[in-house]
Structure formats: C-alpha cells, structure tokens
Length: 271
Image 1 (cartoon, rainbow, N blue to C red):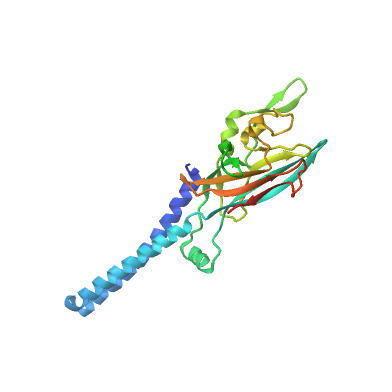
Image 2: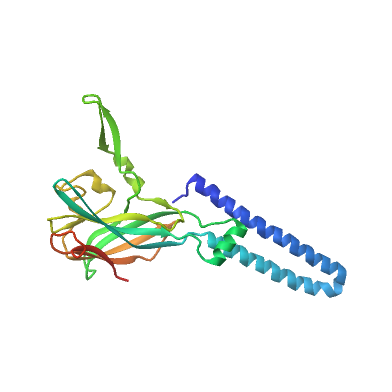
C-alpha cells in the first residue's frame, strides 16, 4: 500500500529535518574533538578523541533511530460504537471496530517534536475480517476486506432528464476504494462496520462494501452469503499497514433473539 504523494513528501521532509539536526550536532561535536586534539597534541589526544568520537557517533545514531521510530504510526484496533437507527418501517443496528493512530502524548515525545519538528506519520491501513464458529471448527465467512465508514459510498450519480432529477446507481468500480484509508495521528480514529441486524429478524449479516449492491434478503445491506445465524460468532480482525499484517485481535459477536438492543446484538473483546 503506497502512501499518497503528499504523505510521501511529508515523510521525506521529516527525515530530512531529523538528519539535518543530527548532522549539525555532529559537526559541532567533531569540531570540539579536533580542537582538543590540537591543544593536547596527537599522542595524548588520539585515544581520547577516538573514544569520544565513537561514543558521540553512537549516541547520535541512537538519537536518530529513536526519533525516526518515534515518527512511525502508533496503531490500535479496538471495539467501536454501536449505532442504532431507523427509517419508516425499519429499525436496524450496526456494530463497529475502530482503528486509532495515536499522536505524540508524552512530555519527552512532545519535547522531541518541538526540537526536531517531527510528528507521527499517517498510516495507510486495511482491516480484514473472518467469521468463524464459537469453537473455531467452522468458518462462516473467510477473510474479507472491511469497509471504512468514512469513505464515500460506492455509488455514481446520473442526471435523469425524464424527471429532471439526479439519481444514484451502484458503481462497482468504487468498491475497492473503501478497503484502504489513511489514518492520521489525531487520536480520534476511523470506524469500520462489522455487522448489521434489522429488528424482527433472528439472523445478522456481515458488512462490507458489497453490502450496498443488493438486498437479496429484502432488507438493506443484507446479502445472503454474508448471513450469520449463530448466537455467538468469533470474529478475527487483521490490521494491515505498510505491507505488514499484525497479529489478529479476536472478538465475540453476540446475536441473540430478534431484538437489536445491546443485550441481544453486540461485540465483545475476547483477548
């Protein structure tokens, strides 16, 4: 997953600033070493300068690596909010997870940010989900890319001259645009929808960008092959960023009865 062009230039500038500060510090330190070498003479100062140079160089390298690591994204995947809503004749609930890129918060981190003019990087993220039985013996839905709630819905717009209106139509080409998202280090996080359930039905449905393209069950966002009719389902969530997949986090999806309140339809953390 490639960063955006603006994000790439931001990373280059941050690294350039860090290298620049470290380089200036090294120039002054080596200048001081040369001055000591001249004043004490080569025989006495050689050993002192060599040891001092190795120590200072190592210290500068460690400082650079620490600052560069500090700039890396700090990602967390955890439970998100439940959303209950209704339309005329229709009540439903969505379950979410949330991915957070934590900003610099500690005193040392903030001090470093002011000195070196750096901040955490944004991270291009994807979350993949699978849904399995409680005993993990049966896979209901294999790995599928999750859907970021803040991305534009996969619909196009067309002008209908017959009634002078703008109508929406499903645009399958936009489906993959909802699989990845740049998470900025704001601490607020971005949500992904995991499952949806309508009041009055026993089953719930896994949710992703394909859920917009048909109501094969007669209910919005419900596709037959994503149906989940067990009362307890294990959900494994894999967070991918920078081509690296983190260890999955495990959640329990509770789906009891035909209600959509928090006692009947919710996510819980397993680990």
